[in-house]
Amino acid sequence: MSGAEQHPPPPSPYTGGRRGLREAGAVQIRIISALMIREAMTRYGHENLGFFWIMGEPLVLTVGVMIMWSMTGGSHSKDIGLIPFVLTGYSMLTLWRHCVIRSVHAMRQNVGLLFHRNVRFLDILISRAALESLGGLAAFFVAYLPLTLLGVFDPMDDPLLLIGAWFLMTWYAFGFGLLLAGITELSEAAERFVSPIMYISIPITGAFYMVTWLPETAQKLVTWSVLVNIFEMFRAGLFGPKLATVWDLNYVLMNCVLVTALGLPLIRKAQQHVKMG
Image (cartoon, rainbow, N blue to C red):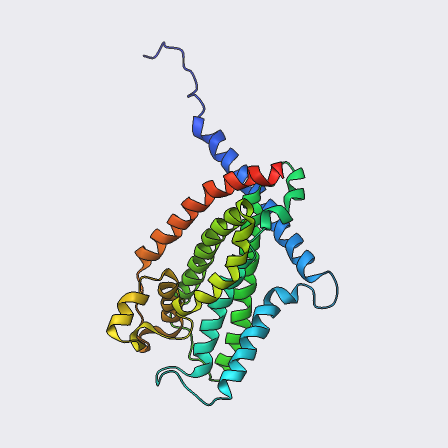
């Protein structure tokens, strides 16, 4: 109707919501970044090598083990050399161990940070896992690039698959770390079982073997391990089809979601205990 009064359309209710989400996301990113910097400074100090040790610590361990294993003159497979195999195994194993172990008592050690209104225990745990992940990944590439130039490695087959596997290992280790962070706050005795559990878990990580190298019965057993699937996926991204790998992405994602879903409510329960303490 031409004579009807025209009114502007009402503002979309989703515009403010999207802006609020963006602002909240930006705040969380700043918080986690600040916590990562604080953790790095607390752990490695402000002077001398300082931040180098974020990647230097896992790099020294991995390169040291590669040198010792190389002195044996052995080789794990006709398709890949000993040095590439050790680098992939120890890089991922270091990420798994450090992410999990750093979560133990992380809540009580950082309870003073809750003085800041926007900081939560979950932010602290995320920042620790992210720091370990980025440092370990940097260490891997610092070792990988010169070895590739020297001809020890072939060029990476699928970088996205390799990075994806690294992200999934970080996620799974973070979720498992949530469980341990909550349990160790609720039970003092639980802390004493963490180191034995980490050592016992080494045979089911896949750090020192490929699934196809094992007898058929053993293959069926080890593929139940989420860690084995992630190790195989990581090596598939690096070595490609020349190395037979066995992994199930859906199985890995399901377990990552599961440990996170179990860990989050446990953290909420444990943080009440920490505050009361």
